Length: 299
Image (cartoon, rainbow, N blue to C red; front, side, top):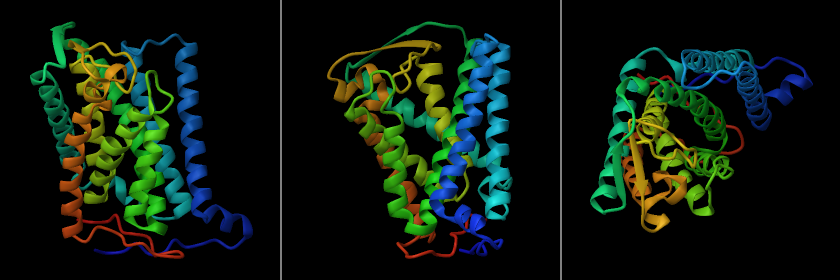
């Protein structure tokens, strides 16, 4: 596995402060949060509904703005090529992630259905799927860039893969703790299933495309196809899903993501990806104080 050359540093105290890993995380987070808040405010002020042509335009704007901010900050602050967004294999990895996300959520719902914990009924027409699809992709771009592209990647550079995996997964669960219907159990479930699996997808490829596709497909299947609550947020999809039984097993009001079934399905997949990454020497050992940056430029 190759390595990226150490970021060239400009002289000066301010520049040194900006190169601090915590400073970089804060700067990225501030820029991305400001952008998403501004787009949300403009959309709300204009009265744009998410399930409309204008709503799709807002989703596209969010994707473009998120990528532009990330790429711009990486090139300016880290002074390197944005290899985690390399065009090589981009469509293939996004497509593979999307297929995997659909499959994993489908397996989750199949288990819940066969266990008598989920029931479905038709609720909408196929053309309406375009709206939740656009929203799911926009959300996946933003969250994967923020959590895996910024938080996981920068922490991994300094503390290695395993600590970065634990820290970013815990942070991802905590970020969903304020959602409707959230509990300690649902936050732990999000950390274990999504936080670990999506980080594993990035570790395996050292690019963001697989994780983005997987994340988008899971949310799209959950809300757009099955019409189940997505992290506690009410959704309207092709089907309407009714969950019953113990919340620990079914997910309860938070949705299937809080189910032990989803946790098991996603953790098994994460272990497979991490095993493949280990075999290909893509795991970064714990190192202090400041290591050379781990390469993302893998063929």
